[in-house]
Image (cartoon, rainbow, N blue to C red; front, top):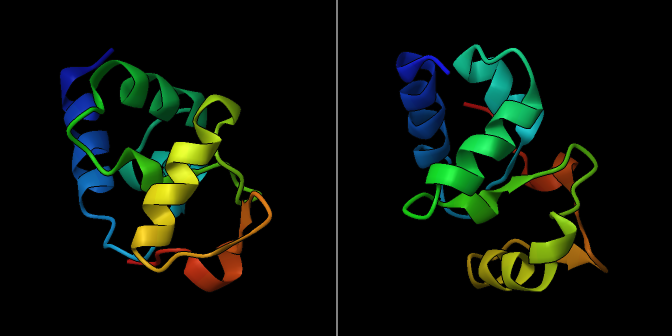
Length: 95
């Protein structure tokens, strides 16, 4: 993977403000990545120091293996879920 792209993705994720969320696709588009899957890969390998929990699937759902922790962290920032889905219409970050 291109080191420059990797850093752009990290910068975009780091800039998501508290109380807002973005989808993997949003991040890919902003950073110029070819696929949203690449965003997930970067987060899993090098996202521990980023607000990873602010990145959701396009339908507003968290990754299944992170759902409880992710929704807990989002709730602490005022992002409320309906069941296990966050309203992208309400909380989506639009820089």
